[in-house]
Length: 404
Ligand SMILES: *Cc1c(COP(=O)(O)O)cnc(C)c1O
Image (cartoon, rainbow, N blue to C red):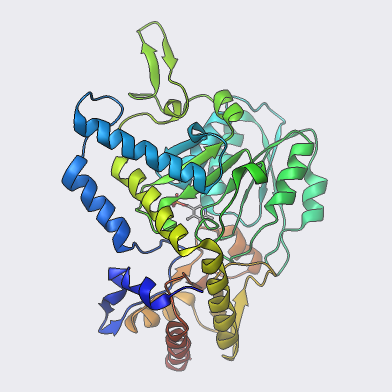
């Protein structure tokens, strides 16, 4: 059981008002809020040991380097990676995916195939399209059913020895579907393909185990797990990270530079050119500490309760349709009301202090599949309450009465 009252005390932003109403923050799938414990870590960094890392002999630089590397270890332990240098600090999932896609442009050949799911975020589609353009590789798509679940039979028939890479998200940000990544990974490996899992939307709800999954690449954004924006990680198996060329050139990522030749630094530095978001990386580690102190199983159980409650209450509204009805889903509800545009509903909800997302959620192909321009998306976190869901339901009813 989680102590919701105590948890809410940790989040200063939850005390504010919006348009004269108490804030109800239901846009957690876009970014999570930050607890005081993480804010304190950020303030402490800039107040006490702000310095550039890995290069200075002076005390502040040593301290910053130590704490930054401790954060890498925390992330390694959280995701149960075998080695800490398999954790690359990035600015987020988008950066992580582009790093891998860029690396594979040196590996793929014309006619090679890469498979992507129909449930992807644009950041897990566009880099692969760019990769195909550069290499002549072919993009294949795993289709989905009306519940928003991938058609696994079709996936199996797409796989062949031509398949070099498979990419899917762990959890869909638009619909909340939890994909059967264990099966996706094992089947891809049978034909010798590598697998990248976009874990941006899973990380706030599910503690993924890199070694048990035997996944090749896994990406996370710090700002969706109570950390700051501009932080994230790429997990990569050592053998893959050694095979890929560096993404960006610059300081930090070299062993030796002359005008004739440059040799690259060891992992993880090979992929960490330039001065990183030092404070951000440290705060990302602190955010995982915060969530682990609450306990991921308790978080998942409570969020599931919120999901079930909200689903029931919202479905009681006539004309309301929920998109994404997979058996296995996280606390995301995408919906529309017949005859109304999602944007208009979202605007009225905002007037009532309720923050939701409206639009295509960076997943236009999913909206095209359902033949809709977008949805209203309410996404719940462990710091939300049933009372807030009641406010949402009342507000949706009000919006409907005003607009129809
Ligand atoms: C948020 C999200 C992304 C993009 O993450 P950034 O932090 O914006 O780089 C990618 N995929 C999924 C599933 C997401 O939810």
